[in-house]
Image (cartoon, rainbow, N blue to C red; front, side):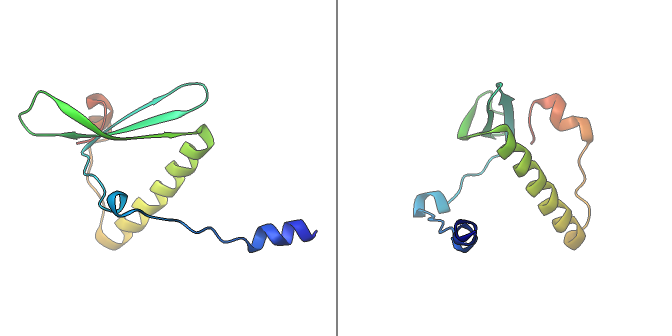
Length: 100
């Protein structure tokens, strides 16, 4: 019982390095998966350019990916309740292999 109480009292301290805090802009994502992980490549596509560059790659477990999906859905719902609906053609992103 004491071990359970100790776990509840632990606070996670998250460190954010200055370089990471700057972030990177991406206007496309490519998501792939294997049996044990999801890979999310964030890409910047410049208009009228035939090449694009992966800016970052995140690798996560299937459980982590599903948790991210839920958290992102909740954040979008909250955004839309404050700012109005985000207009997106449903199949546009899927057909283009990401989002723009």
